[in-house]
Image (tube, rainbow, N blue to C red; front, side):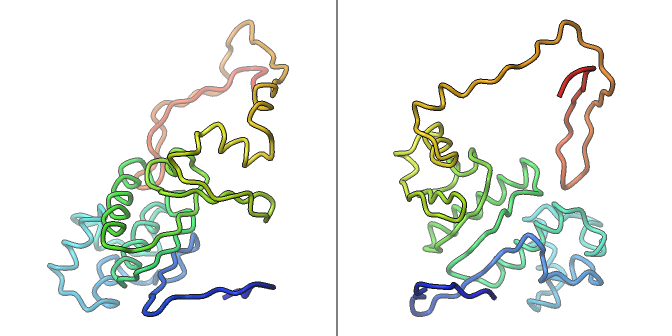
Length: 212
């Protein structure tokens, strides 16, 4: 746990902090998924299955070894264990970086429910659309310096980008580049519906000769 070089952090009475780390250190690689819930929180098998189902672990998925899970599956399991600890203040460090669209929406449903229950949440992300989907306020940091804090409803996306880049809003219109226009498209690689369950939503792409 790193300490600040300066300043004071004051934590209110009866505040229980829950921290989601991208490294998922709290998981036990040797456990089965269902054991992670049963052993840590003393649930019976039926109740553990019901809870895991809410986080998209169904059927034989609950018997997978934790160490063999995909990045998205580990993220879901880490978030589940974090929520089961019932903190009233959450720090979520890039929790959606390994999640597909369905998993992200499930997480947002839980976050909105916790918000209504009075849980405070710090949501760290680089996905701007997700910021506007679930947040009330935006704190912008650039190169370790606080740029400002803004109500989401009062900060259009283009202005947010300008603040993140350290430019004036009007300057964005002047950002141009000289891009080569391909005269013909000659694919050197093509892929169709490439994906991985639990981490990458299927997508298509192609790269042409002379294209970056």
